[in-house]
Image (cartoon, rainbow, N blue to C red):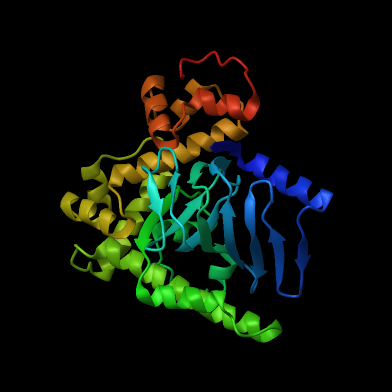
Length: 342
């Protein structure tokens, strides 16, 4: 049997189970331990607050039946790094990825806000995962170091700028697996446990970042520092003129590169094309305008540089897996929009 529920449904079941005393929750100075709802399965979640801005979540559970969970990430951008030590399930982020098969061989990093996610969790199969939930203040604590080595979305997030959604899947190496097992079997308690876990979490995160940056540049010869600076300048020009962007040749001319170097440099630094980056940024701006302004959908389209409502609708649907009108209805109810956007 397969059960379909939303993330809100899951947390309601959790809260009801806590209120009726069918599961237990307790905390110590380091962590909060919560049993998995017995009507859905068995297991626990252990939530460990480490230094300011970084949280460690250990999940170990087995569902009675298969579950399809429809969720929505938080409205503000949040960064999660996740690893798996047991189990195998699928996850979809509409508009950003195809089916992702998550297992002990894979890990992922994502930075998203107000984004749909669908998880297909098997029944009668133990899932063990370790997730790092990271806030900007944690990475800002290394402020005496330059951030250009980090993925571009993280750089913008640290600087509290508008962030395009970011998701990447990597391979969990043997070194990572050793650290994951050390985290699960922490031999200490209290302050020493916190220090031990923080050291392991930092080591794990560095290995994951190294893998991502290596993967992004594996097939490209290194760029000179001056070219990297020009690429980042080009990105800022795009962002500052996203509603009326320059042509590729004009953008290259403005930053002192030829168009080939500009295209290659964007892939090297940001993992996407020049106008792929622009399109993602525009769609994030559109999403924010729909949520926070009183513009019609046609007005939103024009504000981000789309003269054609239908082209805007198609681009929005490719990005987020739903039309602008569907997103508007989801936020504000079923009010009629007089514009031509769907």
